[in-house]
Length: 120
Image 1 (cartoon, rainbow, N blue to C red):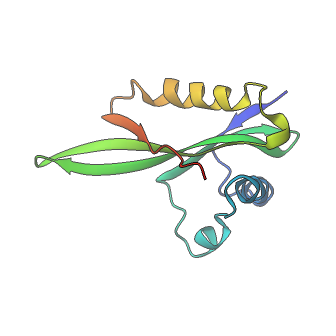
Image 2 (image 1 turned 60 degrees about the horizontal axis):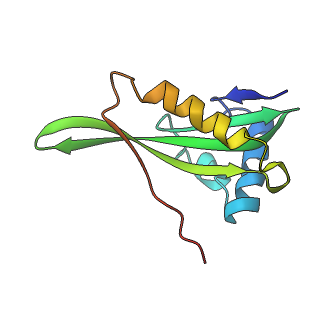
């Protein structure tokens, strides 16, 4: 059984597992960013955790903007990933549905966007 965990930043074990999956899928990780103090409260992974390991994730980047002089709060979805051997099980979908349910009608969120990953 899996759980959705939105607080992996300060857990050494979960952050390590998150970084391992990020390296496997995207060929980079967030550890240096974390160690330098850059990983703050505006980057929130929503990780699917099973047996202490991150197997899928959808991250939220909180991005405030000024639009016509009015402050707007948008979120960008990123670091959308599922461990290759677990794809097709609906784990990424569960994370995405959780994120959308949490943020779509949130009163302090004006919009959601993502950037489509370019394929080689």
